[in-house]
Image 1 (cartoon, rainbow, N blue to C red):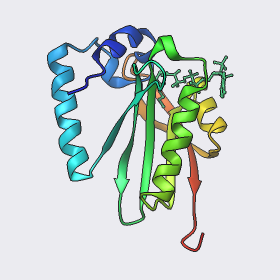
Image 2 (image 1 turned 180 degrees about the vertical axis):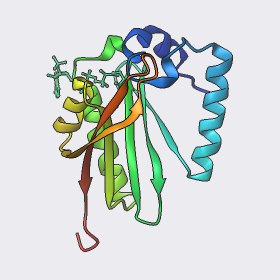
Image 3 (image 1 turned 120 degrees about the vertical axis):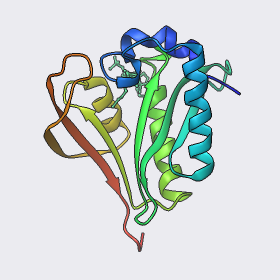
Length: 164
Ligand SMILES: CC(C)(COP(=O)(O)OP(=O)(O)OC[C@H]1O[C@@H](n2cnc3c(N)ncnc32)[C@H](O)[C@@H]1OP(=O)(O)O)[C@@H](O)C(=O)NCCC(=O)NCCS
């Protein structure tokens, strides 16, 4: 089983402010549990975790996925993080664009969302570069996992009509 453990450990300082699961550096045992659970969810089509590999080096460079799925629409939310040594090259924008096309044209999506904290400028920049439109800001919809402060969340989306 491929595990993103080394990439998570390398990137923990960049992940910690934005990803609740990165509050503590995960152990290898916990990471294996997470990956086994993700595999089960993928088979059940309840959540689709995707691992990202660099074409030239073959290295695991991050993870993404289609989450909060509603197959009756169908609707998905894309999440993502990149390995620190591969950031700043446009690779996540390329991945998110590809996963968006996969959601619309292979899975029949009618709506794909990206949600991020209003302070997460790098994540918002990925959404904008990948062609997403900011639909609104959900005020005070969460508490920050490190500080407990109230968080505002940006909701970006792309949609496709039934007759497109
Ligand atoms: C959000 C996150 C994935 C963004 O990563 P990133 O490396 O900035 O995004 P990309 O891979 O798309 O790279 C964009 C950068 O590459 C540059 N770039 C170079 N070539 C490029 C190309 N061909 N196409 C697009 N951008 C390119 C862009 O100008 C941008 O540079 P900048 O950082 O100086 O503005 C990363 O910061 C991260 O993992 N954060 C922690 C987890 C997180 O917050 N996830 C999102 C939760 S909602």
